Image (cartoon, rainbow, N blue to C red; front, side, top):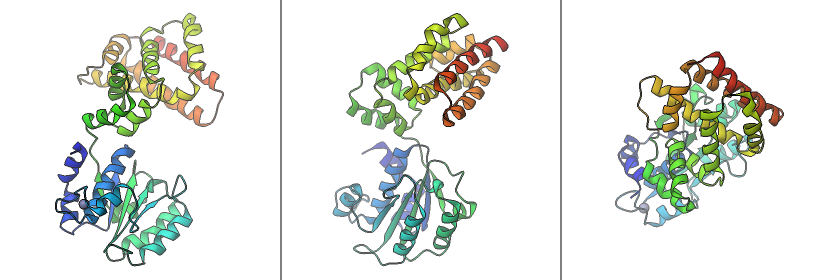
Length: 318
Ligand SMILES: [Zn+2]
């Protein structure tokens, strides 16, 4: 049995679902989309399963849930990236109709935090007075943009991280070489969706090596000529590159704060950078991400990024 399914079966939400005491609206919260999808599937299967040890994974209902073809379970958004007003209208109409084949209806709202505030208000009325035997599962990567009134109507469930072995089992499908697989596991920080994204990027190992070399060997402006052209070529991977860089810096700052880390790069950074320098790099990377979002010239962003690293080393020496 998958580790995440074992963890699911230890949750209070599972116990309530088995006993018919589940709240009509449940908000599942995790930065990992894989965890959101997995736990939602377990919960829906528990509610619909006709087997003994729910969710049995064997019965007709469990199979339908796995393949998302139970007519009484509707998933939103259907065709768009985010749930739009037409879909909210469709969902609310459908919520008040009787189930087709089961004794209950379930609505799964992925990215509920991205729903327009007006539409959230429209949804709120139904969450306040839900139709009988109807459940709403709101899946969110973070709950910042969810209206407090919606949150107060939902049972909030912060999902546990996916176990490293379960992530490694998923990674096996990618047939990565052992070193890259270990790098993916080290850098995904327990986020399975991120691990799968890294695993599908053929250049991931190179990005890690480049981030390490930049942090540990880039000290003088004369080296711009070596580093800048390599970064110019990484336009499509620049966000992943920054995430890798920031993960090393984050680990180094944690070491400064007294935590132990077996990340060799982070341990090298602690010897090589002052904590003020590291914190400033993190701050400036935020600005760089904003510039990217505004579509500023990429090569100019790279230049200012590299000069920033040199300047920070100079301004806040160890
Ligand atoms: Zn079943």
